[in-house]
Image (cartoon, rainbow over all chains, first blue to last red; front, side):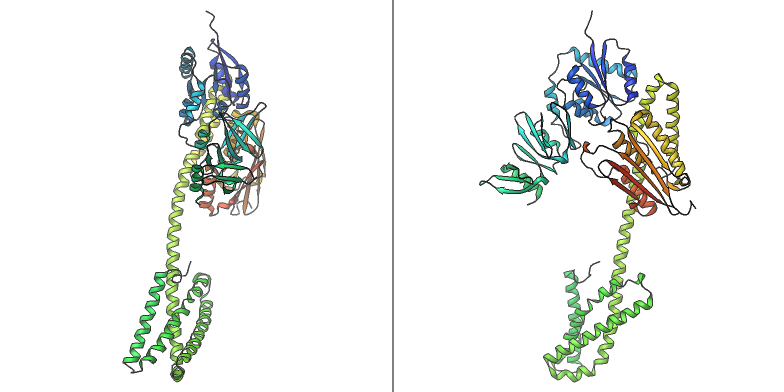
Length: 251
Length: 350
């Protein structure tokens, strides 16, 4: 009889929207509301600490968006997106969302979403990592204008115009900026397609560089080159990387 | 405008051929009709006509830099008399020297024909002036037609943007969500918000794109808009107004301030977790009303981007109404973002 409750977190920046959702959710005794988060930073912290089963997630929030927040969490709960923007629906389902509620929504609409969540929770948990990785291959409408990363202490927002270059490191990449380097669990392939190709070039299996950082190119061996950045960092350039640069810079 | 002949190889060749034919025809007449020796018949016209052809190219600059519209008639005539005299002097002098170098026995003929040569020089000069003037006129006309076309396209586009941006749909949906929440917790406040939202929508529907309203009315509307947003953002949104009351009579295009405040909320308030002040200041003189809106923001959040559609739209409207898009100024010190609008006034404030 005593089924475990669905442990739920609300991540939403507007107070009235939180209040409404709370009122609606009061009618579901099978839910246990763990708390409310006012922004993505709090969201990351609470999800990693509390490991909820379900989150209600707004997309447009201060500092980091709901999608960016999802990239930073280690625990993957079921997600119901709540937003006034309909253009993110496709992307939301790429994140394997249980449902996507357009504000303002009715109690009945919420009821439908809750049923989907219960269905999903009853099934075997899916491997979320694969799905998140899979969605990286989707064509993008817009290029990344910033990257969010998390180290042990805090979350950093790196505007893409501050990236100097990106180096691959096994399953991770290292993002180099003027302020230091940051690690993120993503593939080079992801960044190659997500960053604006007008500004970034894949010059080697292990390197993506912001083109305006390159000070000069030097021949190294017969068919390989070395790119020297303005701060004297030297990066290897492969044959195909050299071809990429040649196309981009018209030399 | 570039020189129509010098920079166009094809036209320059045609021009050269034209003068060669004239010189040739003249030589043929002298040889056949006046029974002059062949060398004499050739030397004099070839030298003189071709030299004139070369020198006359410079008349273009005289015409171009002394446009008809910018000068009075007597000044223009005076200028051309000087320019033509200088040109003819050089022409006569150099052709005399060259012909003398080739064959000195033509000296007498050259002296005899001097008055005729000078007169024909002036006549040719006049033809050149009319020729170049018509080119300038034609080019200006083409330019004007092109500009008019561009302006028309811009107006259409601006109208389209304006229709789209009058009320941001996300603002509407988020406000409706707030109302939905208030109906349960605070029905009186929900009612108030519905009324405010209705007034705002009515205002934006009532006034056409090129209509002007008093600054006081527009400000009233902005306060309405901010009061709705205040319900959503609570203490995060702190509007402050420092406005001279006698500026209220100033006249401004309707709904021109709304996108500025939307902008301030989007980049200032929305991205913040702490209260953000939106400071509105207005001062006025006899001929201008100056309105500035300042908000603080967090510069580290995203890459620098160009102007958004809202601000571009304002610029386009200012261009259409006042013919000057520079009336909108942006100051960004990577901490505070200030937009200043200068709206010209026609003595409505005195």
